[in-house]
Length: 106
Figure 1: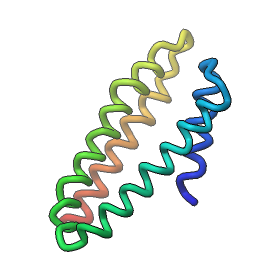
Figure 2 (figure 1 turned 90 degrees about the vertical axis):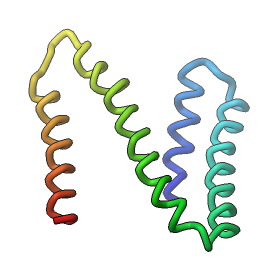
Figure 3 (figure 1 turned 135 degrees about the vertical axis):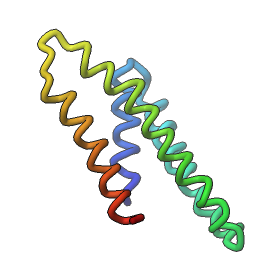
Figure 4 (figure 1 turned 30 degrees about the vertical axis):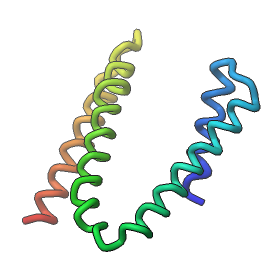
């Protein structure tokens, strides 16, 4: 169920870019299929899941940080009415993640 909003997002992006409704539906179904494939892989490899997770989680975190740093932060700074509060909020969020990590890990 938590992937439904992601499917809607993919479909709306496809439709907004001028693609047909059929292509938008196919793209949304591919998102669901990728999730299902991930579940199957974990079920088949459950003996090695801990080893895989040790590499997969940092990789996915790195991808998320890359997208945020390369796409979102420059987009915020390209607005004509540069609002420093937005940039400050981004970096405060990063600092909070770091502090939370330090508190949890000790």
